[in-house]
Amino acid sequence: LTHKETPSQREIWKRKILELREDAQSIRRQGEHYDRMVSAGIRQRKEREELLARRRKNRDTATGGGEEDEMQQLSREADSLASSRNMMNDLLASG
Picture 1 (cartoon, helix red, strand yellow):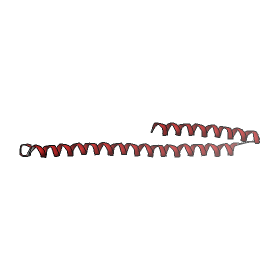
Picture 2 (cartoon, rainbow, N blue to C red; picture 1 turned 30 degrees about the horizontal axis):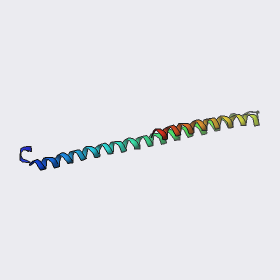
Picture 3 (tube, one colour; picture 1 turned 180 degrees about the vertical axis):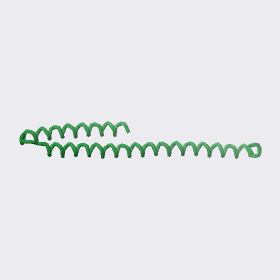
Picture 4 (cartoon, rainbow, N blue to C red; picture 1 turned 45 degrees about the horizontal axis):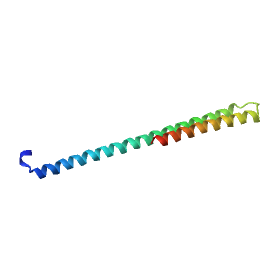
């Protein structure tokens, strides 16, 4: 078949093949980006649920310490939130 084609037709097919390769790479990159975004969303939901479960557990198990225990719980919660915020900033910075 190739011996029947003119050199200009071969060039056209070479360009089309190159365009298809570029399109495939672009689609692959978009798929990888989408996968990262979905994975990040799942991880965020999981972390949020863990934090909320920990918060509920701390409230349910709080005994007699009153205001001091609550302050410690709030302090741990603030530390956890700061840690999560740092993780998110790292994730966003890495792209």
